[in-house]
Length: 270
Length: 282
Image (cartoon, rainbow over all chains, first blue to last red; front, top):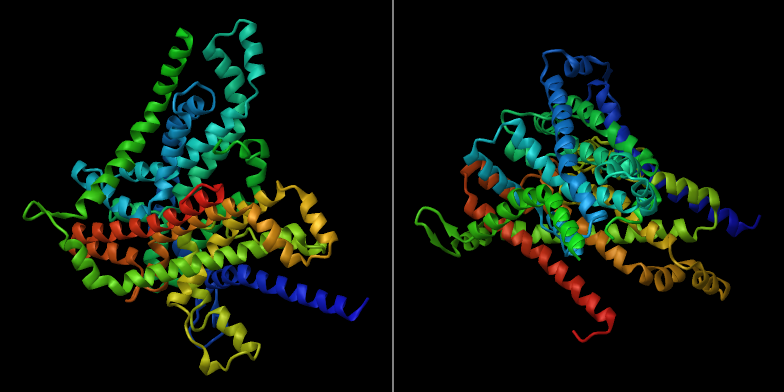
């Protein structure tokens, strides 16, 4: 092994180590905070360790428990509403002979092209006049619009990836259009639709801005709890909440390729 | 012919729920925000005063926002090109595998969580300073909090680089390897191959990823609120402040209009470049 090879190896290891530190350092710091009872400057590590803040977060009548239940309830409702909207749209965009198809696809991309904060504060104002502020329905609707482009685009791709010949075969055997959809198209598109459902669930679970304007003060979700705790300087509660939100996002990151098959991914946006 | 029309009609009916949602929950509030930026509600007239007030109060924050978002976008671009480039051209299999496993972790971590992670990590007694002190890079007394504009940039880059890298790596994987191999055989260094052969071929993907990140960073409220809410800060914080403290939708919408304009400039640069690449006159 030559000197330059050894040097290259060391350099490579060093850079990878730095990247690993940059990525896992902040996560590790948060994990320390979740089990720190007492920790202040200039101590490098917590002075006392323990789980008393976990007990506070998961206490039956606690604020945190309510936020957790709220978050999951809202995310599930958002998935139901999004799928009810996105499955027919995906069918029309992915299968049907829709006039101006690409224009419609672009239209759903529009919310990604504008900084959303300015739109959200006006949604809140409109909702206020309709009495939707501080209600579950209002929060679910705000989350739905955020997930709309993903749910519509992914389910469009899922339907577009279904082999048309299988549908024709079913039709030739005498199945009606609805039966073809129920027994052939939908089952084949299901993995893609499931992926879009998980995506929407995560978007809703993690959503902050819309809830901040529409939900407050009546509806608190985990991100809002995290924010309030962090602003009050209660880093333990904030870090435990952050960890609860971190787990599903990392699980999804690790599993995303299993749900979003390459052939569906290749059809996204086409 | 008749069946096609019927199918087209059916497709439009199926589209209806999605279209109505988009109109009511996006286009309507968007229009509202554009119009109300020019509105004086008390006198029921149209005015430019909201913009004058915005620039009067928040011109520092407007410049600050442009700088933060631009610097972050550039850094995200550089980092993602380097990572995706190494994934494609790296010769050490183990290192490529490790990097592929490593870079994605922040991909779906929400901004608010990233904000909290950095709030502890970059603080004066955070792990970042502890490591620097332990490693002898800085003296304990030199430890400073990074929770200012630097903290916001770090959080944005940390959170968005995996997304752009993922897009880039996907685009690079579909490239024809033969030109890359040919250049390598001719003795071109990997870095040159990356910059002169690979990046130009995936520039559209890179631009799309960067523009999406730019728009996203322009609309994130949680990160600047958590990392650095004192002035100078980003205009997202100012918008929330105008509404929560004064119920002042006029100035808030004027600031929103300014954030649209900042995005429009980027979109315009991108479109102009696209036209140039096609060879059409600009």
